[in-house]
Length: 516
Image 1 (cartoon, one colour):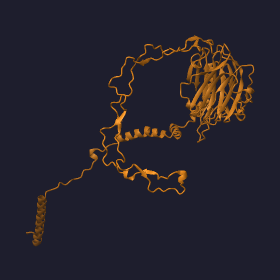
Image 2 (cartoon, rainbow, N blue to C red):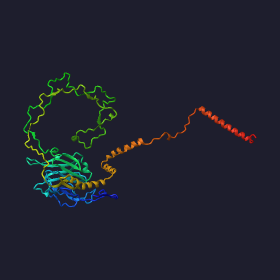
Image 3 (cartoon, one colour):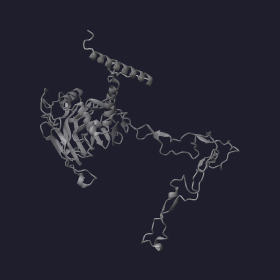
Image 4 (spheres, helix red, strand yellow):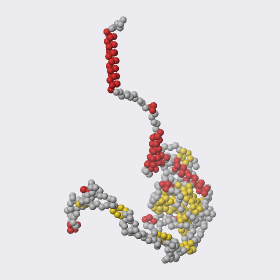
């Protein structure tokens, strides 16, 4: 697998952003089934030609279309997959294994890829491992065809599931009952909404342990003996269906104290509410004004028939005189809780000396009891099928694998799904673009972005912006105000100085010799 980065101009999202040399994966060990669809054909597969029972004819047919094609986005040149092409139709397609899988001493590993290319509204992408029975006919594959295991994603509304269901045969009466594994331990929503190819893996071990993985990470694990509903093994004892509670059985844990006596001052007649004795009528209350009056502007309709409609009365409107008053009509004190109210006296409860506990029917041996300590040993299966209804089209499947060897499954995943994951990662937008895309889908995220980014920036600016020092301030000379007397003295001195200068000039002009 060679990967070389390619510098290209802006391309559509569906184009790969670097060169890949793809080779169809080949199993590195023993497998029961391996399918890549890279030959572009469905020669190995059989599309069902039957109809569903007990539903309307117009939707009973398995007429949903299948096609082999590339992914819409994050394409890997040369890599093809099986695509469910119809919406609101029944789809069924199946293929025989190279040889049946028999549950004995080796694990079962089922692995395949799914991409909900257009998202998913309501529908599934699970596989069924069809039981190896004599009457198995893939052309007649439908919802009631016997299967040993059902595994894979399913979604409707906001219920996101990863199914693991196995069919257990009752060793006593041979009835077959579905057993459902517990729900996954993680939130599965992103696997249905991100439009990426995800790898689904089921590992089932001979010790009855199981593990469900998505993208090679465990999302659920448990035991066939302890973590499925209903349980594989019924209880040893059950309630006797013929037992009944005796008529004199006393289940009351508490009873009224027979020795209690009502106190003499207990007043059962005291009302729960009384008028507030401290209340005073608000000043300005209009006792003589009605709260509502007849509308003086109303007129009897022309078609009013008093014989048929009765006497006409003008509609009532709020009394305008009450608009500025605290109230109109008869004033009544408001009601308050009566501090003397005690209600009907009841004797206090005490422990019932005749209490016998909650009655339960006696236990008897369960006539249908059995103990199967190896539920792993299910009915062998000989085919893999997809029997689906979906309200969304273009569900992509690829690289089915059934084996008993974990290392074979891991290498298969590395050579197939691992390459898709690498291409998808290279084509992902940057973190800023991802945040913008997320905000387009959920506008409330803008509030989070503003608080997360804007608030810290504002605080940094507030506390770190440089402040002016004392040297940067410019000072002006401020003249101190003087008294009026000082101002007059200064003016007189200035006038005397001016007069002396003028006298000196006149003397100099009169004596040109300058005293020579």
